Structures are given as structure tokens and as C-alpha cells.
Length: 299
Image (cartoon, rainbow, N blue to C red):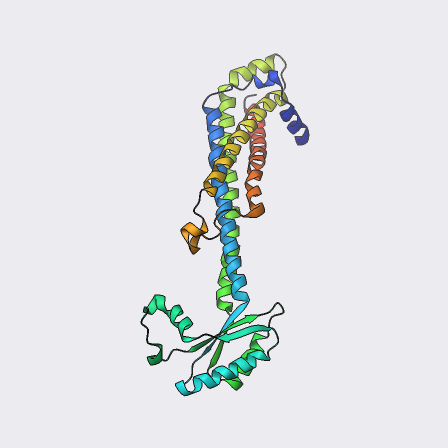
């Protein structure tokens, strides 16, 4: 039944189209609502996808690396560092391991303590950067070996960093989907109100049409077609405006690391083109429901 109604709507009917006024407040309200909601949906989609990509990228980077911190008396630092490197060299799943020099550790601490940090005078632990291969390594077994060979060594496999990022990525994707669903619901509500207003304004015309033999399906089809086309046109304009807005966002080079990857990438640019058909579907269902319900009230 709905497929037949959709086919009739696409084919059109010049006589039925005359039932609905071509202009008025319901016309611009429907188009503006569809455009505004689609514009917001494009940004919600872009921000959720970008945030998810950033969290995935950070999580992947942390998952492939680990850090070993060696805290020991000054005379034992070098000895325990060599012992840790020997352990790592014979550990399956470790791709590479290297001890950071003083310059690298000073660069890590400089944002917090300034450039003149006296490393020689402070008991700063030695850091060893570990990179794992695709197979991975047994973190618990490595901890036990380190405890036996270098008591001052502590393995940080970044699990405490990866888990919050994974949770954040999942929640951001859920938030984006929820936002789009709420936007679709708001669009449906506004189009329903506009359709009801138009039907009420044309109540006298509808009574005359019924007197001359017009069926409710004929009348409803006119409203459904007109409002669906209005919503589709408005949604297409909103999607285009949203794409232009996303394209004009600062690039990574201009905005630094915080905005790296913000927007769409690759095939992600195709997602906004699905929004106008979705808006048309929402308008079709909402208007059809509102039309038949209002026609029953006008009986």
C-alpha cells in the first residue's frame, strides 16, 4: 500500500496538486525546518565521526606502544636499564625498545617545568619506549620478568589510557546517532504540524471535493506529495550548506592538533547525501499519517 502511494507521489497528479496551496506559511515552514534540521544533522554526523576517528587513532597508537619506568638509585640506573633492554630483546612480541636520553626526557618535561630543568640534580626515572609487533606480548609475564631482573622497573602498557578512549569513542558515536534521531523526530513533528495546519486551512475545499466524489486517498496524496517535495528540497539545501560549512572548517595545519581530522574524510563525504532521502521518507510518513488522521476528523 505504501509502495503504491510512494509511486503515485513520484508520478504526480496535476489536479490533485491544486488541492494544496503552492505558497503560504506552511510552505516556507516545511522547507526551512527540513533545511535547518539537515544542516544540524550534517554537523552532528561530522563531529561524531571525527571524534570517533580521533579516539580510534589515539587508541591504536597507544595500543602499539608501552613505557617502562625505571626508578632506582643513581648508581643502579644504568645497570637496570641494560637489564631491562636485555629482557625486552628476548621477549616475544616486542618489535623494538630503546631508552630515552636526557634530551628527550627534558623535552617531555619542559612544558610543565620549563627549559632549565636540572635533570642531574633531580631523581627523575629513566624511561624506555617499547613498541610491540602485530602479535603482541604477554604483559603479565613481562612484568614478572622485570620484577626479577630489574626491581625498579614498572611497565605501563597504557591500558588505563586506551579504555577511556574506547569508551569515549563509543559514547560519541551513540551521541551522534541520538542527535540525528532527535533531529529527525523534530523534523517529523514540525512537518506534521504544518500539514495539519494546511489541512485545517483547506477544510472547506476538502468538503467540496468530497461532495463531488473525491476520495480521501486522492486528497491525502496531494498533501503528501507537496509536503514531501518541499521537505526534500529544503533538506537538499541544508545538506549542501552543511557540506560547505564542514569544508570551510580550519584544517589541521591551521588549527593544530586539537582539530586534526575534524570533518569528513574519504568516503565519509558521501554520508550527508543520504540525509535528503531520509528527510523525504520522514516527511512522507509524517504527512501521510497526519493527512489521514485529519481527514477522519473532518468527516
